[in-house]
Length: 568
Ligand SMILES: NC(=O)c1ccc[n+]([C@@H]2O[C@H](COP(=O)([O-])OP(=O)(O)OC[C@H]3O[C@@H](n4cnc5c(N)ncnc54)[C@H](O)[C@@H]3O)[C@@H](O)[C@H]2O)c1
Ligand SMILES: O=C(O)CC[C@@H](O)C(=O)O
Image (tube, rainbow, N blue to C red; front, side):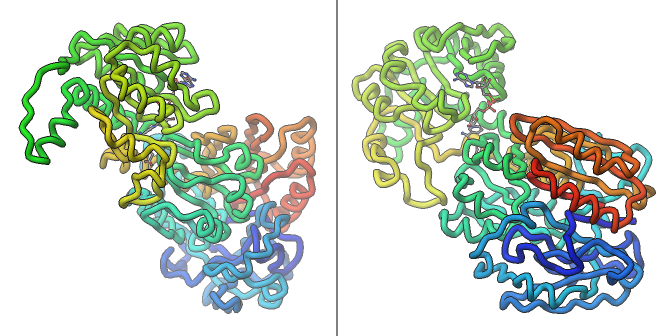
């Protein structure tokens, strides 16, 4: 059987918070059923509210289609009569209500009553026919020699995903291949528009510009997962997300090499004043000089933050004959002949080039200000490709004008535009115009990770993480949830259900959960916690849809519950 379940309801109707994080009436069908429509041919659409799992009195398969004008439309299912009902509802869907969602343009939701009245219309859900996993990483979670059972929390066409900031086509392809509804935007969205759109989606994909603050996330009643198609996750309120059952993934190192290569290029450019020479030539000026132009061989590179990028850079810099010193808050094994120094000041005192590769944190805000610039060697260079808040730009402008630093390269800024265009001015950042007047200053528009290689790899990595999470509940690689995975169920494992229970991490919850699961055969179970939030996943055999309904309702009644999903 290839069915799915995302929570369940409490009555034999589509109800719940029809306008909010509600579940959906839907149906699934057996894999390889001759009547299985292709993922893209199904006439299912996202439906909020939910139908109960199958019981003897419930039609075998149920679906609702919501139209933009709030009408609940019928969807007929020619061959679904023998198929089980599948229903899904997260705890958020059931317990949160957002009054404005009824007016949402893309999701003019039916009210509970409307859904109620239209319940039990029968249709089919398309099941994916191909395995989404393309990476060896994903293969670790498959069952050797057996075909995996594809768990689906939704009918694939019900899953709505919003992709912003020109996320790579590789991700779009992976997500569309699942049959998900993908809405793609090249730029980030202004907060108001973002809030409008985020209400309706189950997953969102962003890069560094989209701020997913608590203010935005509190409107995201359907959201179960966020994909940051980049390294940095400072743009997301990770804690708020975790406490509301929203799992966040990123791509921790797929663009590290691209950043490291950019910085190597910039070191040479700064040492040879290439930016200025090139600008002069563009204006018709021939200015052949060697004064204060240097080789980088034998010079000292000071790396602040010796993580994925810093350590890559270390290797490349040594290969070019540089000496490498670094500062990091944790002891990290040096690569090559690089040397970790005890303080930031030590690195600033000794380096000819200082390059920053720390995350945006309260501790790294204005980490390089006047005091630190004064500690740098006279005539040294500063490179920042980490986050704009790490450098006090006004202090940098002063140091450059006074000739204390010989040049700088900036890829990141405290305020960055949401889209490409003529936005890099004093309106965006108060010192914008002053900055542009400086000599030997390389300015780039946050392109450290912007290579074809990096973006394509990130698209695949985060795209697959989203699919694994949506379809199987696997949190490996999550940045704000405990990492929990269970091997995939096999297609032979009929009538198995996967229970996912995100809950507050407090004493006694596991005992309560296991009392609820205890009437069933728990084939496997894994649970882990991270701060205040815990994530439990269990596979249960011989589970009828009626059992699932009971399980779901029992788990939902626990006061520690953050989010319940049941996949089958
Ligand atoms: N310009 C770009 O396009 C671009 C691309 C990728 C990443 N980034 C930025 O670069 C940052 C670093 O990336 P990474 O992959 O190397 O991250 P990472 O997590 O692998 O490494 C960061 C290192 O900084 C260290 N660190 C943290 N706080 C510190 C402090 N106060 N002082 C000194 N060291 C500290 C950590 O211990 C860690 O070793 C990211 O967080 C992201 O913001 C920018
Ligand atoms: O691509 C981006 O927008 C962000 C790149 C980089 O800052 C990252 O965090 O990976």
